[in-house]
View 1 (cartoon, rainbow, N blue to C red):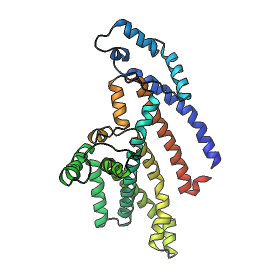
View 2: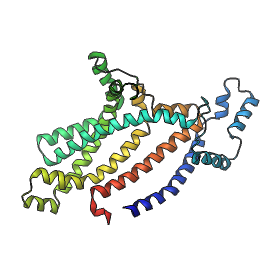
View 3: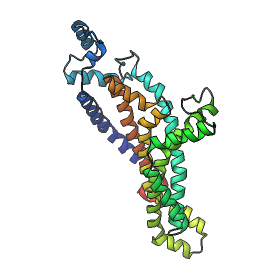
Length: 313
C-alpha cells in the first residue's frame, strides 16, 4: 500500500505541472483585454499602461507564468483585478459553501443510487426493477433548473417549509444552513443518483452471475450475506470511480443550481471572473478544481484496494 501511494504521489508532480501550464495558457484565449476592462469607461491610455505594468500583463507569457507559479508554490494565487482581494481568500470564502452543498448532494446520490441499483439487480425483471429504471430515466432526463423551480414552488411557496433562496453558514445556524441547502443538494444529487443507479445495477448483474457468488449460495449462506458481503463489495469498484468524478464535478461549481437558489459558491465566482476578465481568479479557481479532481482520483484508487484486497498485489 505504501509503495503504491508513493508511486502515485510522484506521478502527481508532473501532472500538476502540465495542468498548471494548460490552465495558464488557455485562460489567455479569453476575449478582451483585462486592463481595458479595469480601466473603466474613460479608458485613459496612461491608466491602462499602469494596470498592465502592475499585473505584469506587459511581460511575455513565459515570464508571467514564472511569476504566477512562484506565487502558487508559496501559497499566493494572486489578487483579483476587479475587487482587489486576494484570490486565496475568495476561494477560502466560497469553497466551504460549495463543499457543503457537494457533500450533501453526493450523500443523497449514493444513498438513493446505490440502494436502487442493488435492489434493481437483485429483483431483476420485477416491479422493483421497472420502478428503479423509471427513476433513473426520470433523473437523467429532468433538467436541474426545472426541478429546482418546482421544488421552490412546492416546499417554499405552497408549503412554506423551506427558504426559497439564500444561504446560512453552518457556523451561524446549522438548522437554517441545512434548510437552505437541502433543496439544491437534492437537485444536484438527483441526476447523479440516476447515473449511479444504472452503473450499480450493471455491475451487480455481472457480479451475481460470477462463479464465487454461485459457490457462496451453494454453501448455504444467507442471501443477504451473499449480496452485501460478496457481490456488492466487488461491484462497488466502478461506482467508486464514478462517485469520485461526480463529486469533483460538484466541487467545481453547479452554476445553474447556485444561481436558482442564490448560493454564493464556486459556480458564481468562476462565472463572474470570466465575464470580468479577472485572470487571477479564473486561474486560481480552475487550478483548485483541477487539483481536487487529481486528489479524488488518487483517493478512488486507494478505495479500490480497500474494497477489493485482490488488487493489493
